Length: 320
Image (cartoon, rainbow, N blue to C red; front, side):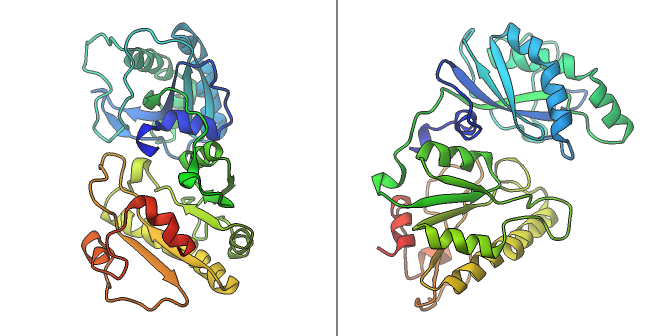
C-alpha cells in the first residue's frame, strides 16, 4: 500500500492527530530561503522545540485564513491540516537545496503556494529569527509544505500475516506507519546529535524487544530529509555512525538472544522510483556466507537469495 501513502497524512497518524474531518494534510518544514526565494537549508538545524512552537503560534492567523491548523511533530517540523481545499491542491515536493519556493513577483494560485508565501511574510520579521541571525544561524523564514494528501485509514500490514511486530526508529514516518498498522513504536533516540556517543536505545533494550516480538523493524532516518546525508564526507560519517551505534547494538542483541535472523535493506531516496530490487543482506548464525562481498544491487542479486520480490522480504526475515 506504500504507493498510496503520503508523508503528511502518515506522520499525522503517528503524532496521534485527529484527521477525521480534515480534507488534506501536509508535512511542513521550517526551512531557510535566500533573497531569490530558493532553499538554502531544507530543515533548520539546531532549532529547539520552544522556538518551533513560537514560530507555529505566530502562523495561526495565516493558517486560519486558509482554513488550516498546525501541530509540532519535531524541532523545525510541523504538520499542517486543512479543513477545506480552496482550489486544486498540490502535494508538494521535498525542499531540496536550491529549489525555488515561488518565482519572484508571481502571485501563487494553488493553496499550498498561497500559504507558503503568506507564512514567509510573517516569519521574515519574527523575533526568533532575528536572534538566530544575530547568532550566525540560518533563520526559519519559510514554511515549506510538501508530502500532502488525504488522511490515511488503518493499513493491512504484512499482507495480513498475524505477526507480533514492533518498530524502533528516529523517524516520524515510521512512527506513523506503526500507528496505522497497529503495532508498537519505540523511539531509537537522537542518533544525529552532536555528541560522540549519541543517546539511543541500548543493545539490552533491543534484545528485550527481539525476544518479545516475532518481527522488530529497526528503521534509521538519514541526517537530512528524504534519504540524504549531504556531501560525500557527511555521508561516510553518517553511515559510520549507523554502523557503530545502531547495527553494532542490533548484532550484539541478536547474538546474545540466539535464534534470531537479521535482514539489512536500504531504502532509496524519496525522488528515486523502485524500478528494480534493492540490495538485501540476510544474517543468521546458521547461514553460510555466500560469494557476495559488496553492498550493491548487482552483487546482492548474484548472491544465494537472488532477486527477491519486496513482498517476500518479511518471509525471508522470519525464515519461511
